[in-house]
Image 1 (cartoon, rainbow, N blue to C red):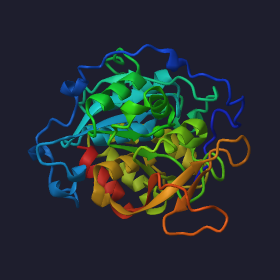
Image 2: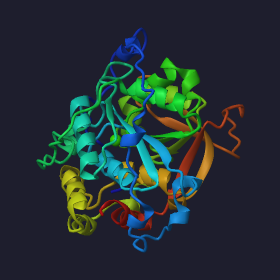
Image 3: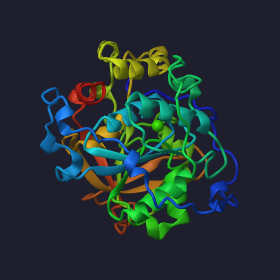
Length: 382
Ligand SMILES: [Ca+2]
């Protein structure tokens, strides 16, 4: 079984999408002039990376950055176990500077998501700042996935006891100010619903034009969904936010469910390796306990980890085997197709639609699935 239907906390889109104002739009702008880059991670020397354990070498990673330049990323996350594993992957990369982690409701509620992000960073030895963001969605409904991730989103394994708290300030303001103050440098790796990103785009569209790229784990790609037959959870959780992001004209790369299945799924044997690899691997393995139980109850012996796979696409260009330009449209109308994202592929002529749709999304269509786990193990579980 390649795709599991998430049992979300709320099964139906409800409520009008009109007339609602996101609460945080009323928030005053805060100054983040001193971006927390000094506290960011990735400061370990490249010599500390255990070269030779990965099929990728130092020249193949970091998206073309020079040896002395770290890529600056914001991780936007509804931190459950898969998000946490992705945060750890980025935090362990000496060529990446996590300038901040922005948290929102999604897999779990905002408070739990924040604790989980803090714990993931602490496990990876990273003191990047964490900012709380959206506590609800554009249409006011909350759809969580506690049934999949456990009550704490991290397998209910007793591993969430962060020693610090979230930083002062609003996640959306942090995102805006970071992008504005570092034009063309900030990449956002979005691992949850698009609510924070969409609010940032609405609140200051001019500032957000300075974003280098948004990497979005979302949509079913060109395959089936997991929240419904056509909808993927992150889009389903806030379809209006995803529509706003797609329609923004900002540079976006989408990593959908279809590249996370099959050989990319992690097996029991691989989790055993992870568990035996050390403190970090043990943490990640424990956090996936409830997810593995959920998949097994649905007849699958292996599980998807889409967030780490999406992070890997962002961090390691050679992990990506193929990508296409598309025009992506998100269906937001209530009904069976809500949260479906339709991809119009470049080079195709569709009789049913006009060809005047701009290519607004780069869609990843193939990755190095066979080496995904080993790459994760060598880069993250150190
Ligand atoms: Ca997520």
